[in-house]
Length: 139
Image 1 (cartoon, rainbow, N blue to C red):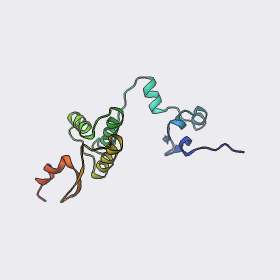
Image 2: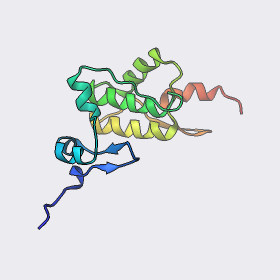
Image 3: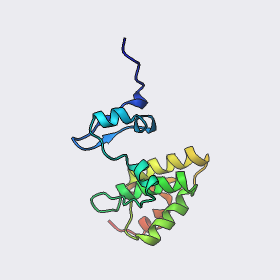
């Protein structure tokens, strides 16, 4: 009889060197070893007091979105404050409108209110912090 394995305990092979799973899977050393996994990022970084570099192709949208979500979750920052904090350090960040929508929804889930809303513009839905900037565009 095989042991039931919850979806949260599964280790998903994304590419031949990249795997994805949750904390339960990260703690299953025998499974990780069997799959040849040699590094569990969160665990290794925490144990070694390391630093993490988050990137995407340009460091503008995808990676910025991940960093904003991290600051909201683990530093308990409102989205507006997280955005200000990151933008001060990397002025060219500009998550796409779809990512903004997810960030706004995530902020509401975390804090039960929003510091930034999605608003209608002639370009479609945009985050409220871009409203004045978009008003001045003449296309």
